[in-house]
Image (cartoon, rainbow, N blue to C red; front, side, top):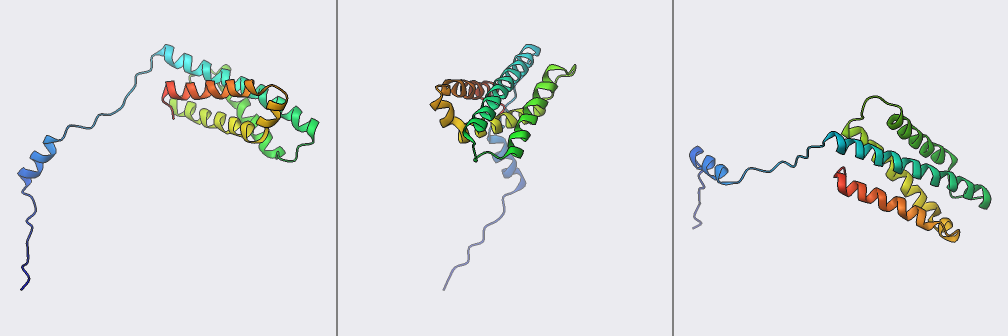
Length: 149
């Protein structure tokens, strides 16, 4: 003969006591002062300008070596993304929101990934790989310090 075990649902008072015993979840918030925001925007602008220069060098490398890896449409899209970032940060009277800065960082990442995947070897052969690595390091440091990732 099998015994049937009945489990009674917890009484409402017991449930509340159990929930009250758990520590409240800590929400991670970070206050950004005006200085922090200005520093963040200047860093993003600097990285965008550096990547723009590297992208121009990439274009020259492609023309010299008759590169077939690069898609001209993708290249032009990346150039346009950088141009928009530089324009929005340098000419705007309004500060972009944190979400806008996150979107800019995504675009910067796309450009950096493009350069590293398709032309890092070319930069290394020309002895300019340290430029790509410096921008990559600056971008990684920025993402870690600003906690935007």
